[in-house]
Length: 277
Image (cartoon, rainbow, N blue to C red; front, side):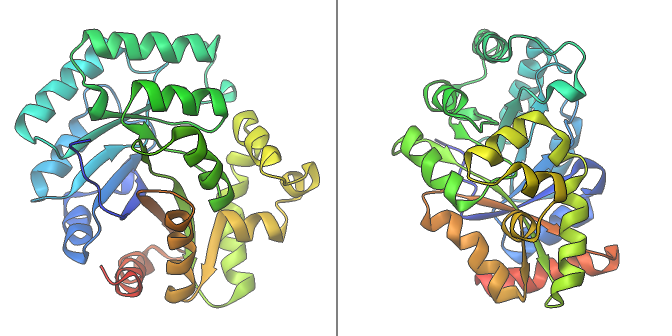
């Protein structure tokens, strides 16, 4: 692939990503920013973040197929790719039945959407696919630059790499809390893991495949929270991210969770130092 996000990136909701923040993320040495929250088809936000930075890769994590028509997304992609070559990765995904009234035939919809991106001039190596289960991971392998799994563990990363094989990008998201107070860190992580993710069928099914139980999911157990929101000092959190790389990921995007927003940039800085960016 021509887009090279490096080994570590930051995942954040689109509302939080300002030009000033992404400039700081770039200066700290992270290779990419992933925009969460289903950015619209005009892709104006990723373009503004690219304009504010020099070499940072910007990726969408993800554009929702139900809410953004492929022809419009393709036109936006072409505009951005021309202005910022090799710096934009279009992440797309099917979303969740609980969030989309039109949700139907998800597998067929994914294939058709990728067909429409083909027709619209979006190259295979310019797009990635949100993928959890084996069938969609195989589509990511065959039709895109690779997969962007969300709310997973290194166990899932290892299995995903087996399906993808060598070559395709594997870029999982991992929530982290830089706090050595276990109960406080778990409370922060539990709040973000439970709502809304543990209510969504796709994530529940994937976590059950990973070996967690219904009780783990229904109670947001300590074991589940510890796996999905790695917490501790910067070194411990850095090791939790590197575990995905050791399991076969090419890139891991950290979603840094804080109890107070004033702690966010200091947490990014501490993590960057621990990762030796």
